[in-house]
Image (cartoon, rainbow, N blue to C red):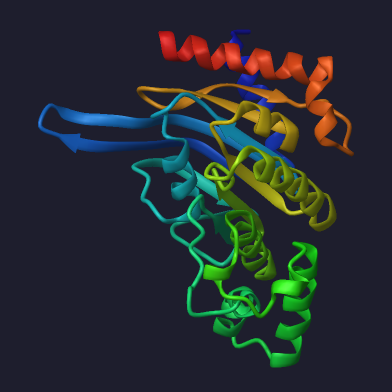
Length: 270
């Protein structure tokens, strides 16, 4: 049996219990020299409550892929299936958090979190309970009446995460949400995100260029090649469920990080 066949068998086994999966997803753009293939034959499957990260060299199409999953950009081939239903566009079943904070500047912290719930015409008392829960979950109880301009970058991302989770998405999609933060704040947000995921048990697909971040947060890391973007390999991350920032200095953690980094470096040099 060839390596490709072995990989397909492994994917098929996980497929039986997948929350969301992609098969043969492609994206191409027309140009004066013909079609430019941005994504080619992307096969990914994510289990319910699994935290999966996608990493790869610059320009490999990580963010494009996430936007396609979120229904914000069209694919040109393949299929994406969530809960046995093929996705054909955006929907409330997928929440998104971007690197840019995308908060409404005229709304307070609590009103930003409440926004999607009001769109759903949820009763006020139920909205208030959900907002209160997530304001506390992201540690912003003292700032619930504050406006985005009064918050730091890390606090703004806490609001964005709370707003996405308040809508109870089936899958949370995160596109380099901590990429613009300073190292200390970034580490704090990684720890908070890991703790939130352990509590909420949300299915997460997380795009990042930071390999250390991917290893710390994830149960599985997909590595992409570029030109065209495709899945090179994936790594199950066998680290303790309870994680601390000190773990980043442990030999087991460093070994996984180095192995993934070598794959990306090889892809960049091909």
